[in-house]
Amino acid sequence: MTAQLEQTEAVTIHYFKLKGAAGLATLCFEQGGIEYNAKSYSFPEWGDFKPKTPTGKMFCWEMNECGNVQCCATYCVSTTTQGMCSKIEMISPIQLKSTTGLMPLIEYSDGTMIAESGAIARVAAARAGLLGVGRDFARSEMLIGMTSDLWKLVGGNAPTVITVAPGGAFTPEKAEAWVKEWKPKIKTSVERYVKLLLDGGDRFTTKGELIGELELWYRLYQLIEGPYAEILDEVPALKPFYARMSALTGPKKLHENQTKFGELPNYFVPMP
Image (cartoon, rainbow, N blue to C red):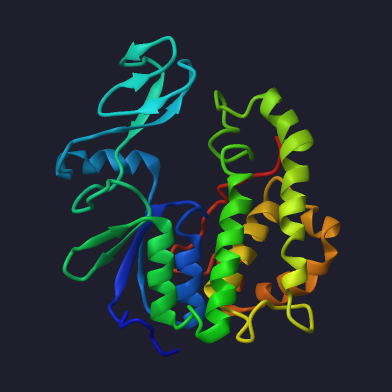
């Protein structure tokens, strides 16, 4: 596909070994048939990068005893404890040449790094020619805005591979809130998309594979594979869209773990 916005440089995506925040950029590269490199990291591997970081900053990954955690230089801060925690695992994001010290990242051939999942997804979409043009571009951007609102209901409330682990933060109270409070709100948010489907009911743009559609597919995929498997049974009008998108190259390769990242577990998981 023809690149847009002069985004023609090859890049490497850096991210954890999870189907998480780098997923949309990965989908765009795979859907567009664009060559890219991928570097994935397990959490313990981050410690190797600390001596290479410009600040030596470490970030709290999981707290077992200290309650609410705020990430900072080398301390965990909670409502009751300040100082080093005896029950904490700490990791170092790939700060290297990154100005933010955040993941995911794309790295250019000269070593320049760009962070923020939304930014790198749009870079990938531009490289793959999946931003759209004319009204297709506008409709795709509308979907991105809607999906951002949708995911505000999911992030921090849904169970993840981390929060359901022993000592994790997904408490019985959170489980009850997910079922009684958040799932109804998510259903209402998903129902908003139905009236925007084009004639035929399986796409939102004439091209049918733009970044906004890929992101919506990915978020539905995360819900279906994770804590809201029945979402399309409750909003069946989106089933044709989801089925068509699932058969496309990018989504199919992500689902089958055939991207450059290889085998990856889901970040969002079913209810424990």
